[in-house]
Length: 287
Image 1 (cartoon, rainbow, N blue to C red):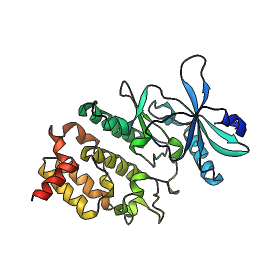
Image 2: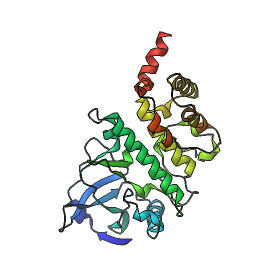
Image 3: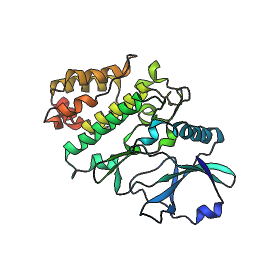
Image 4: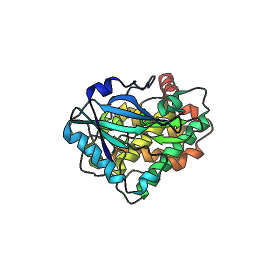
């Protein structure tokens, strides 16, 4: 990983990369350089938080994976170089992924068939399983819809990997954990009082499973209370969801190791639209 040194005036001349309806909470993204041999661009991600210890951890994470099998996975889009602006380590360069949209927009797009959305969710589960099976210790940490892209051929790309980890003893920000107080007293997640969690296979699987269920339910279920969540799980059984699928979510809030729901996505009931949380909620009010 090389160091790129820039002045503030250099950055001020860069054109901002438009994210549309997506908000990048970590920093601003700019077009940095155009490849003369093809149409792709190198982007520059300038971090808002340039605390030296935090940025150094990100750099070390990327360095750790550079000689590993992970860099051969086309789905993983790692930063290429780190950027120093006015003497401060401030961000990274990354190759642009063309002709793509954010996974959150893809899942909410009514023009995309449900079957295609399920196929992409299966690809994420398969990618997670492949990453967890290789020898380099690696954790996504914040595995969530905003950190994936889908191109026009429905190929999958994981981005924002400077927020991942190759060690399990440094607490990371994780959207689903931070918003789910039900995880706070579960030791397998190692949640701090700030709502950060220790990276682990359990945490990554929890985040993947949560991403899947949130899509199926059409609601951020990680924000529900214990009672609301378990009542909804009971409803899933009434709808004919596989018992093993439902039990995986029941184990989220125990210290039993998490299992992925990826193997059950291809055998969901054909009328799984019934498990939408709004349908469930309307039925509860009729009872």
